[in-house]
Length: 147
Image (tube, rainbow, N blue to C red):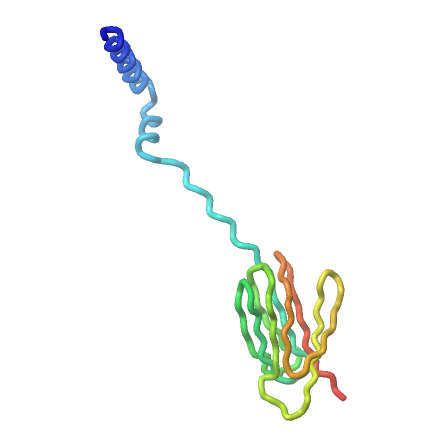
């Protein structure tokens, strides 16, 4: 029993000496909780979606995905949306005539994916899956061919 009392006394003395020899700033930093502040998280990656009306007709357009946008391309020739920044990812982009038409209106959509240009034809309205990459512009051009 006597050995354990002596060991405890030696341990207490050593601990006290340690705290006396530490610089004042070190002990304070440990006890006050002055830990370095964590870095701000990086902003999420963004890109841009541009939809252009090349027909003069009025379109309602939207993009539904990680970011949601909507606009009306109200009939001025070559009017474009300016949706930036939008979060990267997959989008469902839709478009349709703003006012119903008694005629059968054909809409041509042109878009670029992986370096290839694609054309699709729609009857009065349409929807396309498009992807937006980091620092990239995804573009969709809408045309109504004249007969």
